[in-house]
Image 1: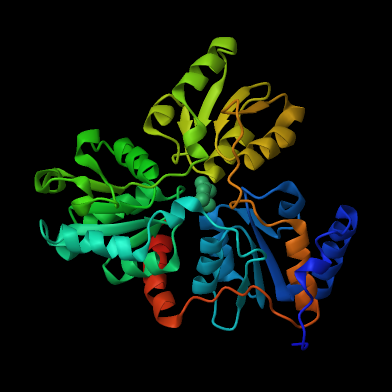
Image 2 (image 1 turned 180 degrees about the vertical axis):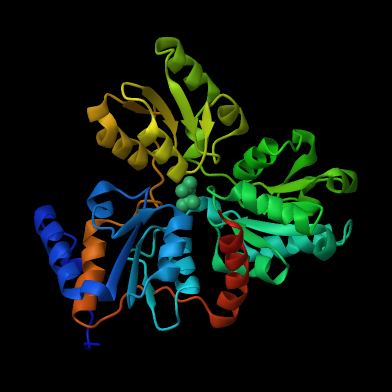
Length: 366
Ligand code: CIZ
């Protein structure tokens, strides 16, 4: 490692074309020592440099199978943590911008989840009756909590399989942090809405009565993704009045009402595959992150497919697609110089417990 890492400020005013060319050059120098993983939600200027593009499930598998010395994650903090946990100890996971996060993941923290577990023990025997299940959009310490309490991780691609596994183990599920993914998946498995209660982590006992807790099959954490809450049934109605032939496709982080009005509901991989495999000259209204919707539009317009974003207003999640080309170049040129910057390292004991929950997920995922 050279004595002084190159500073980020050297890159902030650099010409965009120069940044692009230098990323390509740095990648060529690093060769097989490097793998860049890019989540579908990333902006185009960064996404185009990914060696593997995918959702969290696909990228977790790529990280686990990669032999590269450096895993540079163009995604968010929890994804880079997963890459660190599932890769070998000598591999180094890097997140080019440490401010790349997920506000929904921040809605569940370990202290609140442990408090919920303690409070639930006043009514039930949590370690015998409840499987804790966390969406992959959560911090490593929550994945570790699930690991040590017989629980599991899911992504939106495998939520149903994982939920089936969770119910085989215990009669109830505590699902965090996204109530919508939990509710939409539970409902698709015929769990009635009244058996899915919301745990409000700002209230004692989650704001629930002992009866409500005893009668619930799923206890849903009161978390949500603000981008997916932009989508409304009213907008779908307005749009389909104008274009009745439209296919509606939504991500399960959208509300129950939006998902109920949709022809198709599924993860980013599912959305991409469904539109890719659709007949030419079809119209799609898509309820998920805008960078992905724009990319789908560009990718499939030559087939006459019209792909639209499910909202008239745009409110981007500024942390989800935070990784800009200049921060990517900054970490790559530092690696070329022998400097590791922005390494994401999960403490060993936490990583070991989180790996239990992640491996359970990888084992049950189709
Ligand atoms: O699983 C993921 O990567 C997320 C966050 C969404 C999706 O559906 O791909």
